[in-house]
Image (tube, rainbow, N blue to C red; front, side, top):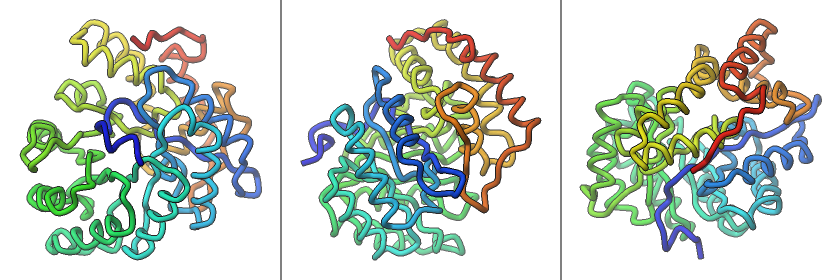
Length: 321
């Protein structure tokens, strides 16, 4: 039984990176070191694997299974493990869900299928069918990944309400609506029970995290947590405790790094995070699978400057409480 059957999916949840060797194969030893470092951060609620941050789009079914099993073996006794479900096929998504439950995952992060990008927002029954197909395959709680509406993959608000009503195992959304008005509506309405029960909003607006948390999001699920989990925990706690000066001081440290990580092209954000781990001495290499490519030296220099401005290269301590 999942630990999230008895408690909300909330709090600070990093999405970890995946290390590759120079032949683009999974570097298990390096991936385990990274996962162990992140999972050792006090104050986390869970860890997510097989998400955007681990380049799930470029990983086979067997690799995703190995990543989850490896992650559970490394840190499953410390934190619940949330597994990403990324597939354009509802049937394959259900297969991934069955695998994740059998392996020991505690929840699923369900991505919208890219096959819906050409008008799926006009066919809400496609969204319902996708999630119901997954729900029929597993008893695990689910997090619905809410994309920006302009992407063509975001769920219209009415569809989101229908989805939550139709699929009781949905316990949270990962909100990347990238629309402050809609984001606040999600927080106030979904966490307030408009869908018939309280649904946690896990923000992933990492480029404006303090503003998002200040709206009242009860959690965050972010790839940047692979680099700054301790800062995210500290910011989350400061906001929840109503400590505005403390939150502003922490945000002042996060700001230069957020500006560097989330600059265009947006698709390089996790590429940049890998380079940050190398600059911080936590990893030996920053290899990404094609079509992603290594960053230019000038951008790596900008990342070093951002890490320095955040006080991370000098080992500045962060209080999580």
